[in-house]
Length: 468
Ligand SMILES: Cc1ncc(COP(=O)(O)O)c(C=O)c1O
Image 1: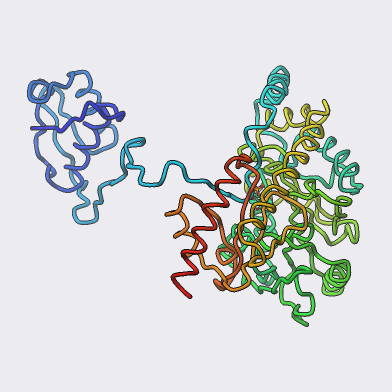
Image 2 (image 1 turned 90 degrees about the vertical axis):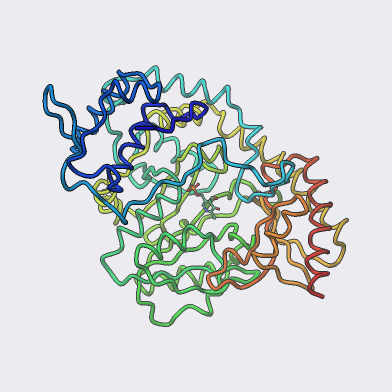
């Protein structure tokens, strides 16, 4: 029997032999009752070590695909054919996939902070400190609500930066806002599954609720945030999702009037508002915006994340919840076994306590402010009065609308031919409505900004030229 072994692959020979034998058995090429070749035969024909062959035979036998009779040989077992239902994995060997994308693509990805600037050495010190505390408690399942050390630090930080005064009991650790939303979607799924949600909106929020069986009632967003005049007079569900301090993707800020009317609406209708606060630390003019939570802590669930003020792979976030639902949310969380690594929490607590966290934010704010004004300048130089830049001097992305054209996701894909990647509002619209371009400037260098905007100008001219 010939076995095709490719010794250049990273897939070990043992796996290749196993996969090929299993494939032949499942397809029926090695029919039930067929006697398998001896290990000596396979070794001689294919130059595979006999130990490997014996090991693979043993594995297939222990899984029930082969049956051995001591001293007599090995046979294919009965009833193990998949026949036409068998599908071969077509996955390319990792690392061998052909890269067709331009290597020098400049990516204005939204929501990625300047990762080169993160003080890795200081973080490593905090991680080392966390590991120095390793005991049985730390190595076991972490508390579902999160480590007390971190929740206390977050309370201090919330008061200092966001003006939120809460007890640690109301702060629940999660693995980021995405997990916070999954938890909320699950927790409230017993009632009418309808979510009032701003439109356009961050895609994963819409997807999480949609896939949890919620009907999404999109409410349009204009330059003053979610249009509260469009809220349904008789809402069916209990939840509203908004990002009031820096709406994603439009970049607008929810106006004071609308804040009041949204909170009043939710209170009158017995609803909870999920306040997605992903980057309010980064405001480059004026004071940090106050949270909706301050207007009514009994009905606002404030969702915070460490993805922007630290780095996304930390997978750490928190929710500040009304006292009345804190313990019930924890019951749901416990049922799902949603827990966040203790070492990361302890390291984050140390990082915050040492002052490295706030120092890093202050430094990054200066860097982003500079990049924000550079990219705004380069856009104005390139496009002049054809565009309008909406950002409210905050965050790490700009929303750029063109006065004569609204972009689709297809348009943005075409831009890549010009060596630049930008996102677009249309990808975040609940009904595919075209709109502005989104330029994340957090993780691009100043040099890339200058070159990227030149490329963008050529790309936009080409797309608009094709149409006009
Ligand atoms: C609008 C918005 N909210 C929240 C988040 C944070 O999500 P997570 O904490 O899961 O990284 C992001 C991340 O990109 C975002 O764009």
